[in-house]
Image (tube, rainbow, N blue to C red; front, top):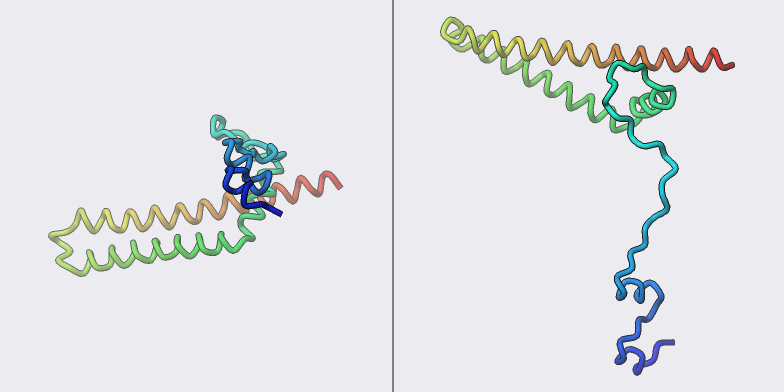
Amino acid sequence: MPRLEDFQAGKPLTPELERLRDGVEERPEASQEQPEAAFDDLERPLYDEERKELTRLVASAGWRVLERLMERTCATLERSAIVLSQNDPLANADAIARGWAYFGMWKDMRKQLQALIDEEVKALKRSAAKQD
């Protein structure tokens, strides 16, 4: 039990407080996870571990949130292009073309991303089937 004299003398109450007073930092043990993959070789195929992570990511609630945000962005770009088309379309030809182009690029990007994900998940299933 701490005593008043110890408190007045500045003695720490616990070993954790003593380390804090002395400025000793506790470092968590090094993680056993692999370091993040470098983007130096974008052409290499994904490793099976990366494909498993991708599968977990797509199954997570966070992925649904991301999909919702991407869909909202797509809808916003489409509405913007529609509004531009309705207001004096002959005077705004360049802006209208740009608006529809951005909408089209965003929509294509989403399709390509989904196709890439689907292909990587299929590749993981093929790899798992080969190992069985």
